[in-house]
Length: 437
Image (cartoon, rainbow, N blue to C red; front, side):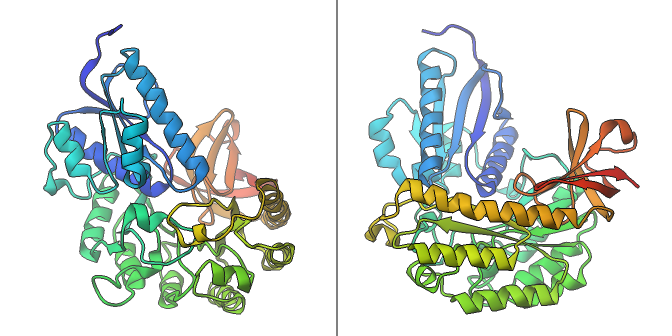
């Protein structure tokens, strides 16, 4: 029984998972708004007629969060707080039939490429002329910028191809047009994302075209920073480094998930690269761009990982001194190649191994940050939090990397979305503190 009057055609979009999902939600919201829906992202109010949950199905924790969120809104529907609940994204792409049986209260499930079907269900039209248009959920001054969809890599542990399909690059001219639109609305930083940046162009141009794309995007007036996320190490296109070196608005930053260093693990993971080639690649990148901040992501507790494999990873992390690093515990995913293996590392040991890696990285980050005390950096300010303005250098991506904090009482001239020069006065393991110059 309804307990209130819900606002007709008001939609709350809830996004779970990665930045690629976030872009999908922003595109969906742009389409809904063009169809005269009142749309909000993760609204705290509860007067929405419709809730659309964009789910993640990547690893166990993310899947559980998606299921918990679906159940929460199904309960709200039963209580009359919403009328319709729709589910889209990776979880429903991968487990649609199971979800329909287990949670039939959801009005409809859609996959990762079903936006036209979802809109039709809402009696809305998919407006082709709006391709690339989005309602940003990030602050206006930066935007995640998806250059391709899907993945052709055979990594044994990854279910992304099951949920996102084969690699599909977006044409360069189309991406330049999208970048110009964002810049005209105040976006100053593009965070390039894809499941695999370095594969870009092979499907439509028959060659790797990431360097050319970056060069073209760097010409877009108003774009001050371009940041590269999720490069694959095997077959890394070295011409990208030359563009990064040449173009001042391409950040000295590269996010390249390496997953492991043990040859045994790399082979089982089907990464197409060896320990020595990985080390050579990291050295080549740093030789070409001495000031680069390298971010990587690792996996702890992959099937068959021995104590020796783990210690090899610890030694490598300690000597390589990545500027930024994160680590996941292995998740045993159905229908992946690794699922044929025995998940023989206990959750306790997985967690201990991940913690051991992060303990080393915490010390490395502290050492590197302390070296910045006394130096001056260009900082882009994202938000005000309590007594501080919070920003980032070119070496830091939102949400995952270090931040620069400047006391609000000392900074009358800071505007969010603007750049300022900041002298670093103090450093902790993952934060820098400074004063305006």
